[in-house]
Image 1 (cartoon, one colour):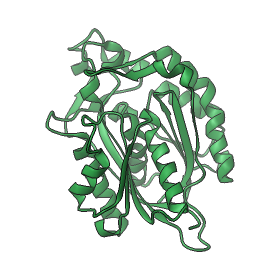
Image 2 (cartoon, rainbow, N blue to C red):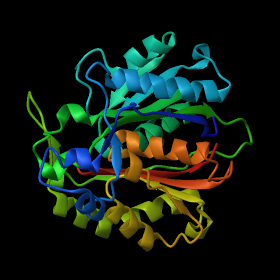
Image 3 (cartoon, rainbow, N blue to C red):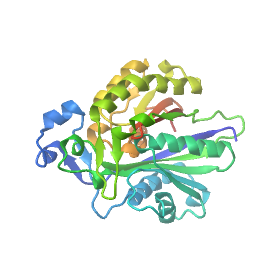
Length: 315
């Protein structure tokens, strides 16, 4: 195989919208402070009965419906998540079962907020190696399960949702639609974002993450462009992890991408960790803000601390 390409996208968000005013009833804060600090206006929160697998399957079902393929065509399912409640079976197997996908390779990947880009990279490698031909790659999170609703530093930020992509092998002579992944980690800063213990709550060292993200990540994102052979000024859209509007703006300013649409789905969706990149990308495509075939830079970063990104061609 010469490579892979994204043929379709889909996303899912719970129906319950939680505004900043509602959060202000739980902790000492207000709408203006939240908008100024993180840029969030509202977020979606799942019902107690709604699982990570439910949301992942809903997003994947939409992506599959948009692809022209059927469940019988899918031979690999990969889910990026850090909030699965069960250790086994994994979310990927549950998604495959819900969608009627028979005997796929199925695994979960946990690099927190960079998870979708990591998953996309591993699936692209599998397709290039001939181990898969048509795959579902999903980012899904139910962060409301691990949020301490009395902790102002985290409860204003995190939310629930899922995004999915269908990848397929490119034909002979067809250019690859997924560029080489640039990935890595900073293990010595691994405590900066964590979900630990048997009754875990998400905790983070906000200032440490902010400094790392705004000073270290732009050069790494530019490496993804270089490896894909795409100049920064050619990028049509930049879809980073939706961590914080100030972080997004800080990275975008350093990239030198004058024509790029910068995704800011965090405003209406909050921070959905591994779901944030595919969720934001799916919405851009649904609204037709990026032309088909245009180069899009994806870049995830967060817990670990980990990062990963690649240039993809818009489906």
